[in-house]
Length: 304
Image (cartoon, rainbow, N blue to C red; front, side):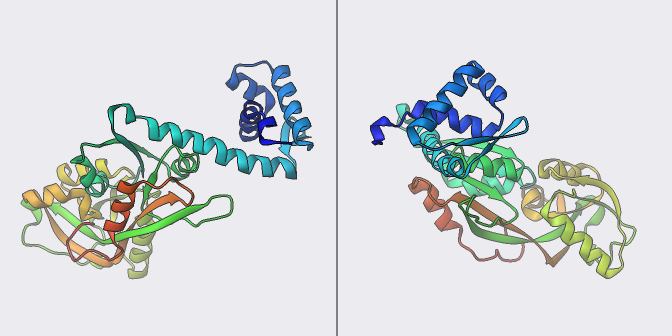
């Protein structure tokens, strides 16, 4: 068959059915009848000369040919979504850059990273926050241009991703200046029984911190376990407890003197990554951001 004979409308319907895995739910999402959807899928199979689905109980399973067609459909409609994203804002002469950030990443870090774009009149930003797997799915669908994360991801055949290391920061113990001025603690040796606010179990740092305390035979008192770094910042500022976090989270409070660093551990590091797709359309401003981030760890007390 010639390319002109390939019905992309049928291919779109196949793509949605393949992703959902259920004909009835796909028909409801597409606002068509189930029989009409089945007919269009059969017409696509007839054109291609290959069966794309086989029944697996109540669900539809892809054949080998269906898996191949789905891989191409993902690229085709993903690039279509990227096209819409690129055009969004261009009517006003602007480039839209879509940035995802994992929910456990410091918003201060995210703002520091995108700061060059905040003064660029030709850029419009879309900023999203969520779980890493959800953000990566949107990245692979070309609905995001880059994902900022505090854990690395591996590239796989099914997930053609590029993970760039941006930098690291040592983890600090911070407390209110009115209580802790002139005092210091070793981390973790001096934390036995000390009241702490710490990152929650989903945060990449938490397993490191727990392992360090276990190895030292130290059992702090956890008064708060917080996934969201913005909330952890507020607790560090207002609770009076010591807080374990990267200093970038409370950079403003440290500069103002409201909080101070009571201890620091270079054994604990938060790492920062920018994740992109390997086949994405080149964006000059994003490339400049990635190139300017560098790969060296920041100096003591600095933020990346």
